[in-house]
Image (cartoon, helix red, strand yellow):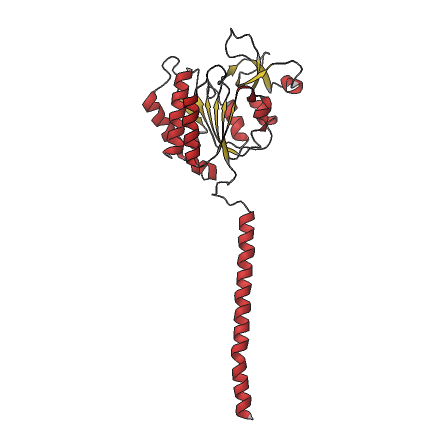
Amino acid sequence: MTSRSKRRKMGARPLVRRETAWLWVAGVAFAAVIILGFRLMTPQSGDVAENLRAAVLDQLSPAFPNDDFRASVTQDIEGFGLPVDAYEGQQIDVDLYRSLGTRDYGVLVIRSHSGILELEGEDAQPVTSLFTNEPYSQSEYVAEQLRDRVLIVRPFVQDAELTFGITPEFVLHSMEGRLPRSIVIVAGCSVLGRTDMAQALVSRGASVVISWDRSVGLAHADESTAALVSHLLEDETTVQAAVASTMSELGPDPEYGATLRYYPATAGRSTAMELLRGDG
């Protein structure tokens, strides 16, 4: 009896150990599933969001189309891994700029008239404006007109048609959503002649703004911007190296002397991927 009892007890012990072991393994597996699910639902620093896209805004296309520019830039952006949305002509209006922060654009290439404009009033400071193709109307965006968020603009003095332009105040107070650490490249005049527009874009989430410091000829702006995008996205260089390489290859604008610059200065040491990840 005693030996049978001992054998019975000894035979029972492994069953208890197996059950305990299986419970322990099941518990660890369950905890791992919970942790993995939490990590998948929680954005991790250092990751590029899977929903990021890119956009090319070609405000100049009706009067100055350049299919080679668009094809080159689109190819480099898609090679970098982002699908590209293209906007042109009458699509470049105030509400498109208003919505940019809601569209998950990690890269924005803007080919547009732009400039530094003088406002009325003794204490008024010059402001940088990006032009749209939306015809000006006194009855549209009245509150934003009164607050100098949108302005009356025309690219050239001889142009008969007036259109709307957006200002840094528009970016700060009228743009919806937030830019997802976006890289903003503007092929247009004088966007970095002052830093007000760049500061506004960075305040709304952009990681860097790259553009020209004064008036620039269209052909030079197109060629240089395409080269810049190639260095930054295809060659995966830093912002500083991409700008330096472009300027070394093509030089300042031969007519106006414009040079490429970027804002903020701290973005220069980072690559596009690092900026989009938030590592820059």
